Structures are given as structure tokens and as C-alpha cells.
Length: 477
Picture 1 (tube, rainbow, N blue to C red):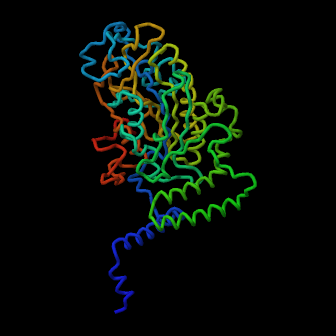
Picture 2: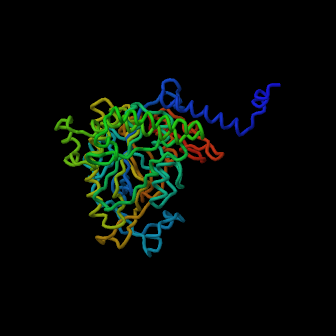
Picture 3: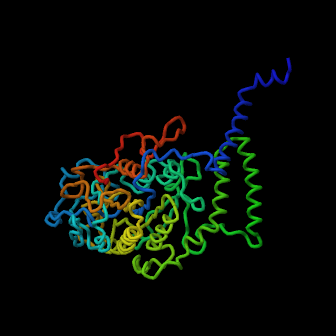
């Protein structure tokens, strides 16, 4: 018998796995370099109502009591004690748990009915009042998390524990990109005029977790260098840069074939994306082609790079260019103290630009296929943190009910959903857990949240976790 043939027939398991890894590396590299040949994204599972999302995340917890969840009877309840029957045995934070009294604080600013539906919206948000017929306000949001870090991690990744993939990463993984020259998931940060500095924002909030790292969000910085080290060094031409990347890709390909690591392929993907972004990003962030009336629409701060208004305008430009998911994180909504001073300033930061984004998308014919979400990780308490009426008093965290609004992307416009009690403290009708919210966002982009899973450490992980989650069909067209 031929000894070489006999050896091949008795190949060891280690050798077999090693050779298989090389094959997997070649297949993955082919999928990366020639995406039209191998269809990777597992979705959509059905016809989508939206193609992209702009998530206006208000970090810190906007006060639903003062902005959206108005109850006229709260004016009569002002300065009375929050009944034990309402508060029950619910957890409160360490900042108010030792208070001897929990006095009710009615909304501090007038509210008015807006739009055909007569939606209550605070006078702190006069521009948002003008889009009442375009938005759906969900007043019955629920989360178990009562502190910032677990709460913001929960709503963005589906878990209070770190290490899980973010909503944007799941969308990138499930649907891929519509523009090969820009990331499918982009993140923008801004600091508000409320609590300054606001709660810290961690990169893991747009991380990829156990998904391939090419699906993590890409943070764009304000100013002339939105991505560090994107430009070629002095003296390096585009041709030289291309040859350098080709040589680097060849070395990484060999490494991928040797070890079968998907992260090596992700590194190649990152280098290639950076090369393509060298021409796409400067054009994206150059507002010189925007007419004067656009800046008037978004407000004076839209000319200041890194402001919330400028980021809203930039978000519109990104979705026009096929970016799948744009997420703005705006800090400062944490009014434990000085509510009377901080909340109006914080609202002034975001009101005009948020409404302008909806109007701008609508007039450009983009709102129907773009889902806009505005909200934070929880709400605020009806009771006062600190002495009632003192200038330093505010409101504590509250997760048992809070409000957010959505527009476009197949969401019912001019609609309110969910009912809370007289104290805006507990949900009475139609609770919407943040798992339900995420299931609904995926659904609008054509994804069944139960079918978009990834096996990791023996478990089938998904954005909505292991507990039951439902698409909120009552708010859909």
C-alpha cells in the first residue's frame, strides 16, 4: 500500500480541523471581498416597512411627568404625599430611599393639546408640538433597571449585563449595509445644557458583543477629523496606500487560513472600510452644499459641529447615503437637582432639531422608510427629590413607566399608546417593555426577533433575550 495514501486515510482530528479552518478562512475572505457571490445577511425575514433607523437617544432619563404624560388632576395632587398604595414595594434608588417624605410635584410647565388627536405635549417642546400629527407617543414604557448604567445597557443591548451586542450591531448583522463606502452603523455624541457633564457614555453601548466586530458602531467625532487616522500620512499616495492594504490583506488572509479566526477577517474589513471612507466621510460631513433654509429649519446650533442639531442634520445626510442605523447619544437628562433650571435648557438643545429632522425627512420623501425614535433609558419620579419647592430639588429615576416617541417607518402617526395612573407612576393599560420595543424596531425592518440569533458559548443569543417579547402591533400601520 502507498504509505502516503494510507496516511491521508488516517488523518488525525487535529489535522482535519486545521485544514477545515483554512477552508473556512478562504470562504470568509471570499464573502468579504466578493459579497455578491455569497449572501451573508440572514434577514430580512419578511417585507419591511422601514429600511433604516435614526435613534435619538436622550441619555439620563427625560421627565415624562413634565413633558408628555400629563394628568390635569396632578395639579390638585401637588404637595400631597405619594400614597404607599401607589409606590408599593417598588425599589427606589439610594438617592431617595431614605427620604422621610415623598411629596408629589405636579408638572412644572404648562402643557397643551396638539394636533388632530389632541396630544398633550409640554410648552418646553414647542417645536415637537408642531409634529404631533407625525409622531406616536408611547406612554407605557417599562424597565426593571433603576440606575443609569444597567438601564442604558439594557435598552441598547437587551441585557443589563455588559458584553452583549447592541441594537445597531444586530441590524448590521441581520441586514448588511446599503453603502459599501460607509459603515452600516454610525454613532454621534453630544453634551446637553442640563446636567453637565451628563452620565458617561461607553463604547460598549454600540459594541458588537459576540457578533463579528465589523458590525459594531463607528463613532464619528465632530470637526475636521471625524475619524482619527483616516487620512493618509504625508507623502503617501492613494496608489501606495492601495498596495499597502493589498499586502496587508494577503498577510492577514494567511493568518486567517492558519487559525480560522473571524476577527482577522474583521481586521481586513476594517482596513478596507477605512480606505473607502477616506473619500466618503469628508463629503458626508461637509455641510457647504446645504441651503440656508436647512440651517434655519434645524436651528442656529446646526452650524456648530458636534452639537445635537448638527448631529441631527448629519443623521439625515447619512441615511440619504444608505447608512442603516444612526444613533445620537445626547447627554444631560439627569435632573436630580435644579430641575427648574436644567430641564428647560436641556429641552432647548433638542426640541427644534428633533422636530426639524422629522419635517426634513417627510418633505424629502424619506420618513415612510426611516424610523425615528426619541427617548431615554427611563423616566423620572412624580415625587420630589429634595425639599418640595427648593431651587435645588429635582426628580429621581423611574422605570415603572416612562414615555418615548416614534415617527415614520410604518408607525401610526398622531397616536398615543398606553395609560398610566394619576401619578404617572404605574402602567394601567398596555405596558411596553423595552424588549417589546426592540422586537418592534426589528420587526419594522423585516426581522423576526426570535429568528435572528447567534450561538455563543452554547446559547442561542438574541437582542430580546430569553424572556418573552412581543411586537407592539397596535402602534403599527
